[in-house]
Length: 350
Image 1: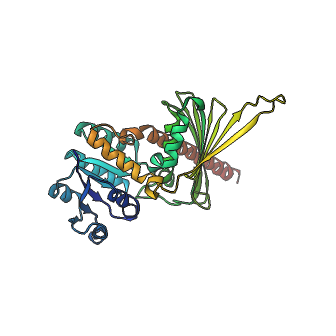
Image 2 (image 1 turned 45 degrees about the vertical axis):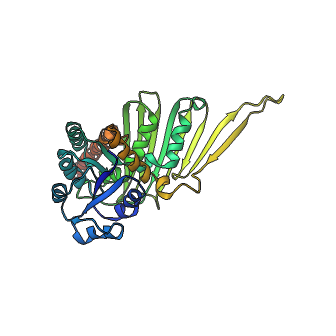
Image 3 (image 1 turned 120 degrees about the horizontal axis):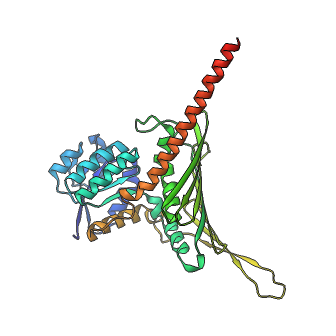
């Protein structure tokens, strides 16, 4: 398959600002239709491609337009329901994160992709960002040694209320933002996820999430994330068995700290620090990962193989999300029970 015919679903800001411009840079990709529940919004695609049909529902697009793949950017309910429909018709599916709301739904998507024998993909652009790919290359050389620990900080100031009709701000935050950070912890943990311990702090409508993970490789990871911060910021540190420390700052700068054993008579050791950042020729979409994730998704279709960020790859990530939500529900239940007991004791003392 050389030319891949693609239908777009959800012509909102994410599609217009990141996905569609990345698609337009690719050879042998032809966008042949666009769909949005708001037909006027769907017509915005004509700013980029003037001669394709636009529709206001996905079933009509799948029935009327021959497609090899769909690229969706909408709420998780849309990704789940229309992803299942597209796969049932043998159409390869790429959806923005999150692909669905729960682990159970993800397992349904995985099973549908397997039965339909199609390639699935999720927009995990952090994983494909140019600095993260560089970091992965650096940590895989023998000199780096084994990864012992990953520290991730993901600061945000939203969401402060549930999204997409869900009933949990915590789950909404984990799915909308921290999903990237959890996925990176699992990627660099490089082994089976063995243990998750977490806690959630709340203040008014904001929250802070702390989570520790352990992997079969022996690596551990610590995550600090939440919505109690003034703005978005992301940083990541990795410590290796060779006493090397690598820092990634806001998906931009990489700083490498490693020991250098001096041979001078004084015997004083020096620490060497090296820095890396994307070059001026790295385009914005390549640097941020949008171009890379879509390019590799279409390559997987051509080669009829798994895409690295397919539905199945997110199983451990969703397991962490479920563990955090379940642990928080237990903690909230205990807190409510203690509150009721205190209230009862106080009423008896009166």
